[in-house]
Every structure is written in structure tokens, then in C-alpha cells.
Length: 145
Image (tube, rainbow, N blue to C red):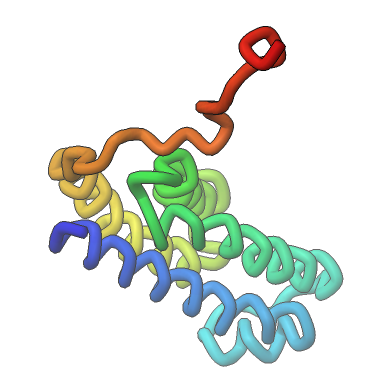
């Protein structure tokens, strides 16, 4: 793996950890987490808890693209796309409501997006022939009879 892929992988995993560190407490104690981040408390903790659950579940989809962005390119691209949508949501659709979450997504997006582009531009060439697991190299019934 090239140096860009190594850094991309590290930042995706850092993002997964960050999402879990914030998402899991949000599931069980949403207002506590919001107060800790100096954000306004929620009037509906059920939906905030559910949002925390969704963030944790979304992070699970980042893992394949973070581990191997060449094999799971779609997951890697969608991880970056999800960060950009968090920025749009917290800065433009609902500005000044929970800006800390928008800032976190923006920071990850600004580092991960260029790294993913550089990772894909420096994709290593295949050094081994394609090993198709479904390719059959044996004989057929016609050849046996």
C-alpha cells in the first residue's frame, strides 16, 4: 500500500473511533453528551439517541473502504460523501443548531477527501494474474465420455 493509502486508512479508522466515542454515549445519554460538547440540550432525547445509533451503524460501513480502498472503492467514496453531507446538514440546512458536529465532519472531510484522491491516483498495478474463484479449469462431462 502506498503512503497515501496508509494515511487514508488511519484517518478512516480515526473517524470510526470518533463516531463510536460520540455515538455510543449519545445512544444512552444524549443530553449529557451535548452538554459535554457545549451544545444545546435536546428536547427529544429519543431521536437524538437514534441519531447516535445511526452514526455508529454508519461507521461500520466505513470499515471495508478504510481497510482496503482499492478493493472496496465504493465504501471509501461513500465514507467521504457521508462526511460532506454532514457538513451540509449542520452548516447549511440547520446552521447554528449543533455546529460542533459539522466542524468534526468538515475536518475529517478536508483530510480524507484529498487522501482518497491521491490514494486512487497512485493505485498499484496488479502484479499477479486474476485469480477468479469461480473459474473452472477441470474437464467437462463431454471430455470424460
